[in-house]
Structures are given as C-alpha cells and as structure tokens.
Image (cartoon, rainbow, N blue to C red; front, side, top):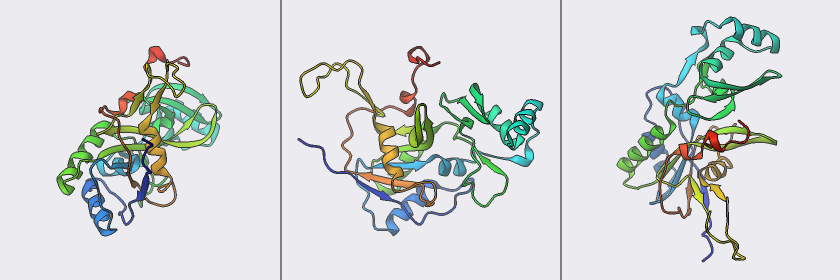
Length: 253
C-alpha cells in the first residue's frame, strides 16, 4: 500500500511569547481560531525558540561579565564579548573555533554553532540571548500532555531548531526533543525492493518532519508551530536523544 499524502498547516495568530506563557493553551486557541481539526496521530512541530521563551531559557547580556578569553575572541572577530561568554558557558566541549565561528557541543550532546545561543527573533526585549531549553524532551512531553488535556487528542510533539551541516551549505531544521513518535526508523535487517538486506540504514524521521514543518514556518514569518497531518507513524516511541550519535560510533570526534 502506498503512503498517504501529508498536509502541513502553519498555526497562525500566535502571540510573541514571554516567560511563563502557556504555550499549549496559545496553540490550542490558535488552532481553534483558524478552524484546523486536530486529529489523533497528528505531529505538532514547535520552534525551540518559542519553547525557550515560555520556559524562561534566556539571558540578559547586561548581566554578563565576559572572561578575558571571551573578550580576546570577540575583539579579534568583531563579536559581542557578552554573547561569546554565554556561548562558552553553555558549551560542554568546544569542537572548533575558527574565522569567528564557534562550533560547540552543548550539555545536551548537540553539536551546533554557538551552542544554540541566539540573539535573533528574541522578541521586544533588547540585549537578550535565547538559550536552548534545559531539557527539550521534557518540554516535548509536557506540551504533548497539555495538548491532550486541552484538545482530547493524542498527538506527537517535536521541538525543533535550525542547525548547519558539515560539508553542506544551508541550514535545516532538526529535532531536539520528541514525544509520542519514533524519532529514528531502523531498517537494518530488512530487505530493499530488490531483496537485498539493509545493513546500516537508519532514517531520522523526526528531523525529516521538523524540516517539512519549516516549509510553512521559516525564519521570517513569525510562525513558530506547524501541524503535520497524514503521517503514518511507525510503531514505537523514544525521545530526541535517540538522534544523538554515540561517541563510540562517531568517526569525526
């Protein structure tokens, strides 16, 4: 049986989120206002920045006293030393620092630019850096439970962010946290269309869904949530940590 078509709906009319805001209630109100019929098994993809704002994962630059190293790096490359200091504090490991770029491993285990620290789309507050959520999987689970309480529908939730990729130009959305679906589909041991056994194929389903949602959200439209309908989720459930490659399997570490 061929797969069903997917539809991707931007959730519009959402406010500028602030610490303490009820993200799930705002989502459900917007869904109802635009007449979108939420269904069992839908996938709700939420931008990390909306989650971080509601959870208060942010830091005022005025509260930061940069270290000498942060000042040196910032002066050398024309950066704000306070932002550099926040990046260093949010990093578990510095992977590469070159040409003004900092590639870091966060305490969550993600390897990304600036440890996920971002000043863009920070809302009306001046001089505020948005950080990654403390626990994106917990954020996804909490949103899923709240949406189920409000709507009576059991949906999957992905907390997504924009990452670059080695050896590829351009950015894509990836799943940081996930709840209610299998983030990675393992085809190892199965056969392809020609009957050959697959030895290493694992598909990052949650990343693919996150990037699909970004087609109707994007960086400049102020649409932080999308609903994907028609996705036939494979059986199983895990959190977003399943997408982090173990160090012993990483050929580039």
